Amino acid sequence: MSAHGQPVPMIASLSPPLSGIAEVPGDKSVSHRSLILGALTVGETRISGLLEGQDVLDTASAMRAFGAEVIRHGPGAWTVRGVGVGGFAEPDRVIDCGNSGTGVRLIMGAMATTPITATFTGDASLCSRPMGRITAPLALFGTRAVGRSGGRLPMTLVGAANPVPVRYALPVPSAQVKSAVLLAGLNAPGETVVIEAEATRDHTERMLRGFGAHLGFEDAPEGRAIILSGQPELVPQSVAVPRDPSSAAFPVCAALMVPGSDIRVPGVSRNPTRDGLYRTLLDMGADIAFENPRDEGGEPVADLRVRHTGTLRGVEVPPERAASMIDEFPILSVVAATAEGVTVMRGVRELRVKESDRIDAMARGLEACGVRIEETEDSLTVHGCGAGGVPGGATAESRLDHRIAMSFLCLGLAARAPVTVDDGSPIATSFPVFEALMAGLGADIRHAAAD
Image (tube, helix red, strand yellow):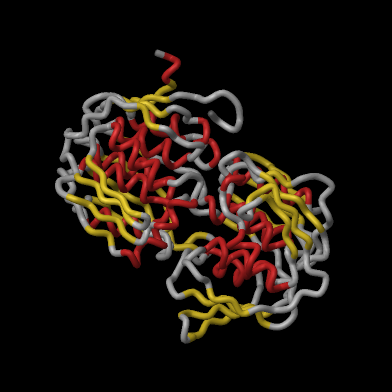
């Protein structure tokens, strides 16, 4: 059942060719960070193209609770008048981050080195997710955290009164943990160092430098060291949010599965730490052209043209690519189900602690749709049924996970029998216009209750 009310069953049926322009929403990662960094400046940050999904709206509400002035002027157009590094006020209410693991973890980092206390909560999905991976490095600064067993929300953080800089090597690749530590380091004296053995999405580093923070990079025995000089005065910016490659993945993959499709997706981020899915699709034989490459808001972007030109082939995804496509494995597993041959995804253990256990959710849903699956703790193998070969005809559980819901709806567009999702309401957290956008391309996706 949806955490926001009654479940909203949705159904997708075999689709005619998809065509048209898919204007997907702004990038969720950049949207979160633009609000948080804007709140840590002195002055007014202007944001265009902000994703107005519930996850980002919850972060905007949290920044207001910490004392920033956050105003919406029109679709995607926002301003943030910040309180400066270390200027967060103690909130007078519990901070509800809804479904957003990114939101809660980055906000915890941003407040961790300010001597205030805040309590965080979220929906049923977020309250089941581990926060220890964030609170452990934040404790090195002097922050204290008290939560439920297993380090789960609701959780109260007591910010460090006299923070110290830290040197922290990430035990697992995680942009959220890296970002939380860097944001905490803003209000600590001296240099805070984060070391990652494997590159993760780098929006925080790009945006910190854009807002005036001093970052350096050097090689360390454990990997790449990111060195942040603490206590800067961040400078307000004008941020143009690029379109989200993780959201673009759904119309792109749907077009690759539905014969005769030809769509365009303008202005999508081509950040090299986010393009693993697109490299994998090209390895599978996809026809994707990256046109009009340019920079917007400090991020490389391009217009995508996607055409269905035949059946894709199964591949083995290099495990070192996992961090650059961690949110896209659910939709990749759906594409793999319609491909010829076997697709093997390794190094995906992180999927088990996302909004849901995404390995289990996709495996069970695909099996219900007639697809042969093998899984381990750290891998998912999909035996492709070939074009038009997925039986479908099942109901998949979304498990309060927006990407699971959208992935199975895309599968329904290419399966022999319709695919139903038990609850499509979580889609609003990241892609509130998903249903309308897909309908505009010709997809047959609708509320099941309408039948």
